[in-house]
Length: 422
Ligand code: PMP
Image (cartoon, rainbow, N blue to C red):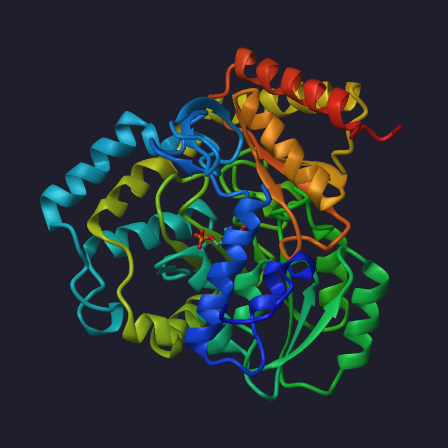
């Protein structure tokens, strides 16, 4: 036996650092831990074999063969990964430029299709040419831009629930965290930090990725400006989906022109991979030269030409957004009728909050038995007593898919009593 660790009390978070062991031993212990979780039915990994659509072939570690499920895990909200026009544009890009970028942007890897994509993104947000820079992922758009922007004399003021990629970008600066969407605490942080730092940047998500709720953007903007700070909004889940014209949470609050820095992803509503920052042309120029990721790492491939079409489709085919909103309304009502706790969601991300992690893992398993694939989110994804089933909807879910999901939740509720009144 290679160690005496009692896995029954451990969680994934406890394995980030295990004292007194070297990295190889830590990896061995971690491997034993994941096996323990599997043996005890607590491992939630499922493998989807055929893409990210509304219906998916799913393999769980507890089954020998894949089964066809209604999938409630995809961020491909508008199903643009499958749109024939998007695919055709991606193929055209490959035909024209090949398959790779060949170098990092600053040293020969910034090509026509990057420029076209950046121009398209600038105009999508109603900003002048030069207001946009593309990163390899949404994750690096946050982490790499913040690492370049915020230094030892600066301070980030962040909503505690911001995405992990934001936190990674704050390693070289000072950070004050305020409780999720609490204006009292935000104001206190703004007062406390006044005249102490060269830059104060308030950073929030537009749509929060686990609760699906929106930032109180109007109030946050007003407070931020009242105290002379800057505002950055990561609207990874809102862009393409929220707002009358799909410009996201920032459009919803009427602040498209005002927000200092917008960050977004190309991997969700736009159906591809990549991320971007929208800011003043000067700030974008600064990032182009100062972001280590722009200097030392390649960005999008020519297949991202598909994005040029995907972005146009937000305006050309708004019915996808309308259909998604209808799906969200119907499904939410069905869950509320069962008195399930869906928190304060205002987006296609709809959590079914259960609390107890074991009950939540059991719920995910029962759902899979009923042909519904949904993620079980436990600590450290959310706090220890806040485990939930996380579901997200697509425009291509049919009424029949949604009814199957709702029936499955009814079945889970009858078995596990997860409704609020229990
Ligand atoms: N920000 C938020 C709020 C997210 O939820 C995600 C994706 N989970 C990202 C950024 C990162 O996006 P990407 O997958 O493009 O790296």
